[in-house]
Amino acid sequence: MISLNKFSKLGNKKKKRLGRGQGSGHGQTSGKGNKGQNARAGGGVRVGFEGGQMPYIRRVPKRGFNNPLREDYIIVNLKDIAGLKEENIDIYMLKDAGLVKNIKGKKFKILGVGEIDRKIKITCNKISKSAKDKIEKAGGTIEII
Image (cartoon, rainbow, N blue to C red; front, side, top):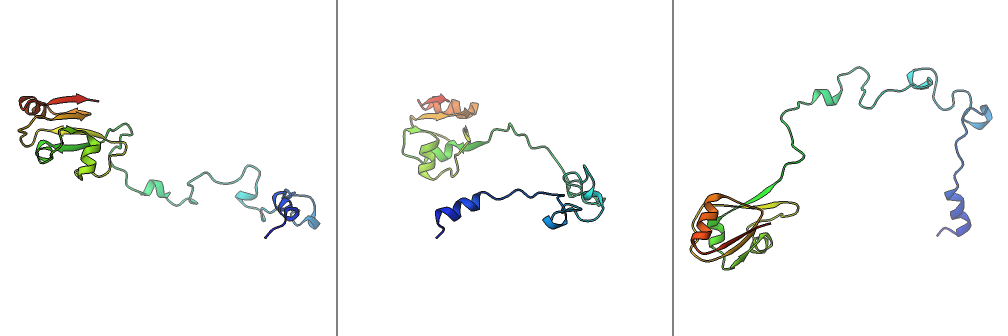
């Protein structure tokens, strides 16, 4: 275990004083070695520079476009909902039922594949026209959030 007086000494590390004579251990070339691009004032290479070799970022094929504003929807069909016994359906209920897995940061859309024969209340972000017609025909209601 470190005692308090030693602990305080660990935190106060002396600054490396460059170019203060041979006896300091950091004199003459100040730890930069002899000559070369990195030894010069303002010397060094930019980020990603690989010594004239074609840089990795230019060698890797780039294709397509990833839209940072894209909204991911979890798609659920009416045939999946028809098998559930619940009357009030939202994304959390579908997660509990095991129909969807990861709901974090995603929205929920209902598509009209399948039939529904009972009255249900659905809370979703989007719904297709055919799904909306089928739910309303069965006497159900839709809430868009």
